[in-house]
Length: 408
Image (cartoon, rainbow, N blue to C red; front, top):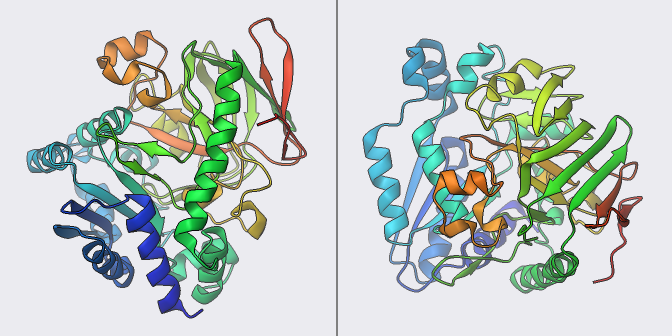
């Protein structure tokens, strides 16, 4: 297939599976100015699917660079009131939200001050959106548009067609009916999540080179697959591609050391973090080391009280179509679906039964981490064994040589 055909298929997936557009629903599509060719196709696909009104929002990383370089420190984290009004309207009207990733210039922000770059995000809005996602109040999804800059970061050369091929394989765009293939994959992952929930495990243990990490779960932690559902009952798939099952751990019950198995690209900061290692004591990261990008991770973890604790643990095995490409994409949307991962920062309230109805302070008391940060990094792979720990301390194998072990 040529690039235009792949874009049309991917746009159709974003609309019909990602946000699963309803007849008469409004849709917001957001990305960078370089993503315009793909965003236009998503807009067309949304109207064909029955959307009432579709808006495209474009950002610009050069504008962001100017903000980081010149704005006062207290302005870097400021949320303009009109943005809050806009997002409150999006939530109130059940507007679907499609976000496009794919950094056109991954090095653009790399030379900027780590603390300023880490603060340069509208914190009030970030927290609000995280809370609304936690209560399943938004039908949302993330897709990606290959660019030359992203291709160079992932492949070592600006070969956009080669990257499109990898994205297509990872996203099942070559299947006869990608929409049907994705709904079938969602069901497969759902059965795996159900098997975890039936066992009601107490903790997850990762063991491998540089890693000996135990992550305690909430008593009411619920494993979730890609099969999301809004609080008004609409199914949608939050990431395309997605290959994970995940849950919200008890942020207070994390102990041990962990080493990332893939690099982490922090697009907001324009930094590639390599050889990331952390040590957790009593639920908090007390040591962060990296060959590159460590200052940026440490700066993020200082943004608020919850940023240095965990909000997510996710399991991915070798059946992942992303992992089967053999490519490190330097894009979290893809790389987190190639390997098991954890996230420091905010936990998702919907990952703990009953927590979505609680106020933030009560969610925290129930073990759901509260933060304006949520950053995933990959810690799984063939050399990392993963066990579930039962309430009586028995270890139950989940992943060996990256192959799923638990009966579904």
